[in-house]
Amino acid sequence: MDFAFQKYTLILTGMILQCCVSSNAATLKQCSSAPLMVSKNNVGHVNYFAESCQKAWDNQSIQLDFSYERDIPGWAFKQAATYFLKKNVADNISLNTLNKITEWYQPVRKGDLYRLNYQHSSKKMTLSLNNKVLGQISDPQINQYFKIWFGHAPFNAKLRQQLLN
Image (cartoon, rainbow, N blue to C red; front, side):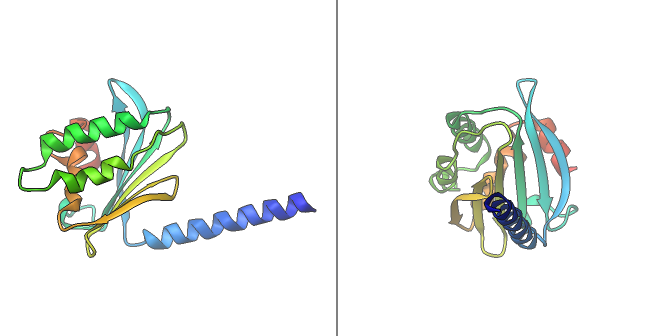
């Protein structure tokens, strides 16, 4: 009896979470997906969501979901993000603000999901790991963080092309 109650509670909790996540992202449409390649190794998968798939990424609410098929240490995320922000973000944008997001990265295990969500109306960026919010920040230019993947010198040019086309 106790096991059945726990199972029912778990299923109900999952349904509630799925409902809340779906209603939060209801205005975003999945535009594309691509494998996440690092040094010719597939480490996961990326899904790109936007209000309009035909509209430029930097003028709307967007979201990237990164699902991982391998364990990755937190320092690797931080090092890569710092490097690609320096390469892609103009000098007049404060890297201090953008690097606050980078500080939130944690190690991931196979099966983990990072979600990077930007709300254009509030100029707010949220980073979550497995649906747990790691941090939120509001700033007029916070969406420039996506230049890690969409900038002129992105993390992976093929990934940028696959996500934005």
